[in-house]
Length: 283
Image: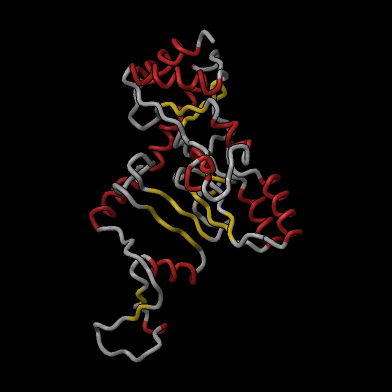
């Protein structure tokens, strides 16, 4: 799935426990719309005492164990993204979900300058209807009413959007079988939100570059998701080196995301496949 492996996480936690350096938080990322194995990660959190924050930016509309991603059955917090390319959008921004009342109260305060308006939680007396208390150093992360209305107008269509993405992904699966590439892992039933359709080309980075350039010349917007984070200068300056995360690097070598979006027509998808076949079909 290209996501967090519970077995690898368990090994890391066992080593961290021996060294006395257990994490306070683990953040599983539901890459491309497919949920991580959250039940096993939750079991590890109970054993080692860390909190779990699901990065579900790609997974709005996806499901795990026949329940919607975001229900926080196996996490303390789930975070969604409403960026323009996501399943639904508010232009920018996102949402935080939790089943913990204290975390909910704290997030609400932090999004609005750390201001607390619940009288029961004030340290001083109520001086009037204008009164509030700043209990923390917060931020201005409030979504505008117009953005919220845009998001709500699409929320009722979410299941349709996801079903369309799944249909397109299944069609790619069928029509790309003769090409030298590895398609995304598919579960039955398909519970992924199918935010992306990333393939791995057998020819590695060279084949990826040829395919990317050919698709761009044909007016087709392909993309690469993502450059390994530890390769970035910020992390290199903090001691990370190439080779530190070989699985992520192996995935990146040859990874290419093909266009996938609601409203995509069969003829448009055929154009993508034909352009890709013209480049990698002879490798």
